[in-house]
Length: 210
Length: 223
Image (cartoon, rainbow over all chains, first blue to last red; front, side, top):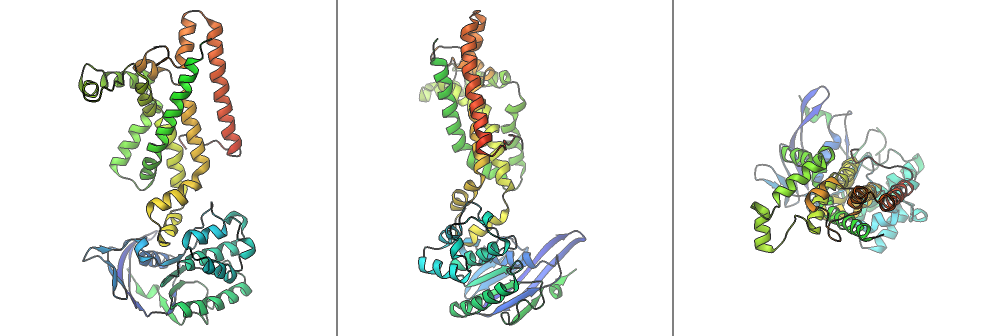
């Protein structure tokens, strides 16, 4: 179970607001995170991963406390090791597809499996600049999966994929998450996008206080 | 013609560049992350040699490291190191004088990398050092090359600061730029021309090779 209870000041164009979220995510659950632009969906994921510090809050993963501002506990992103798929992909321009995965894991059989899931095997020696938007996005997903994360945070992970690729990949991810007991939080704008994958929903807007 | 000044110049430039690379990379990395008053002050100090007359810098270094007082006296007595009128003095002065040329391109290149690159690496469990060496540095290669070549070329061309702290001692501190000046003073224009032509050619080849290697993009040190 991942338990989150955080408060973070957001500086927006309209002024300052407070992002206040309290939620629980059972192990193996897949949650769609949605809400209007600027509501703090990306900030929420980055707080969980440890990239952004909230003013107040507590995050626990099972029996381990990742963050407790009152007890001054704050695990680094390296210690949390939550898989993260960035909205801008954040691929490493100097590395090929294969090198991205090798940087993340030493498990060659797993790398081969991932390349099959993402259909990137024929492109394994290509650098990101020679990949299409959809291929880059798939690589970003595979890199996050490479560490076999217990918690996976995905920020608009399917936005650049065509409908067929999306359906296939979501199918693959569903069984992968089930096999590994992955807890996933997926930010998505698209109403129908995660149907059949995410059984839970978290609306950031309702948790948004002036 | 005595080629010693040319070799001395190349040796000085190579040592200065190597030292600055080792010192410059971590400092530029630190400066590229966030802002604080200490960083602003340090950056201003590093940038000063760009605008300060070299003779001013040389003069203060001469005073600071004079074996008669203060730091210079202590270094001489404790470690038998002398920075005034010596080759190591030239290295010290060059490191300070060329620092903005190493620091500028590296820092601005690191700042231009998206912050998500580091975050992606951290989320894979990689340390800050692994992220720096495997992700950040390889992705600023053109700027790194620009910084190395500019530092080297700039050190080749030093005159004022070198003359102030090193003087004109043949084989020790008489670098090519000083040999040019010395030859002109002695009305030996052909030797002056020979040294000048060698310096001109080396610098031209260096700068043009950066343009070619970086696909015609040479970044200004202030960029």
